[in-house]
Image 1 (cartoon, rainbow, N blue to C red):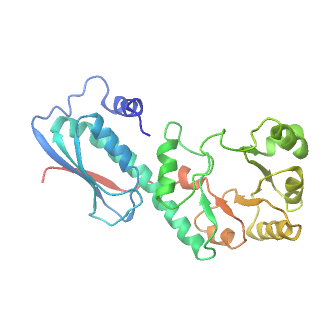
Image 2 (image 1 turned 180 degrees about the horizontal axis):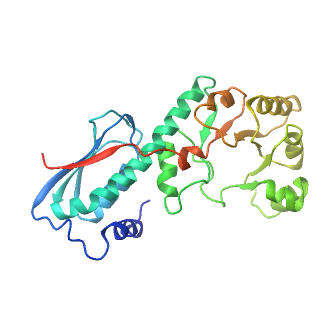
Image 3 (image 1 turned 30 degrees about the vertical axis):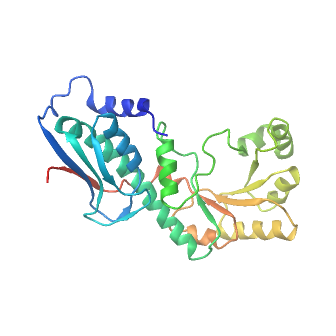
Length: 272
């Protein structure tokens, strides 16, 4: 849910305390137009901005809709001053989210050339204050949000292992979590994958491994009858996601979906 408080922060940042630029009289219409092909997202956020300003949204595409140059993603009508005040914030939000959705769709399509089952997931490498927008954009592109915040799953990472050791770290967190909370353990070698399962991991994160090493770890766990999900992560891009999808892992997570996606080129035009 996008709150009024969020919208107020976005608008305050752009409008400031003395907006002369947009003191334009009368009523007008406006439309958010795609200038390149991609996947539309962030339109709910754009609509929330205009709603807050008292501008009517008279039509918009569904999140996740494919767009081509010239397609109209959102239409509004209302006081010209308020339409113009909301324009830049709405374009920035929708452009950023649509860029993430577009990159996610590309990654999913690449993965599907090798596997119909593997999930393409985001990470917590999101922009402070925009995680909700960015995670929803990943879903719009056909991806998985992964954990939304630290409360959704315990992830035992390299620093935890360095401080407590793998087995002791898993035991430590198992004592402190609900039965409903999964524990994921990050490993960096094929040999440590079965160790993680033996220690009680529900999910094994195969971190910074090559596709060949990832496949070897998945095979090793299967040979030992391990009942745990596997996830590949660490510097994976759209260019090599198919190679990781072919390894048999259940999940491929990619920080680049959110932290490196270029904004989709959108423009906002008023009048007929």
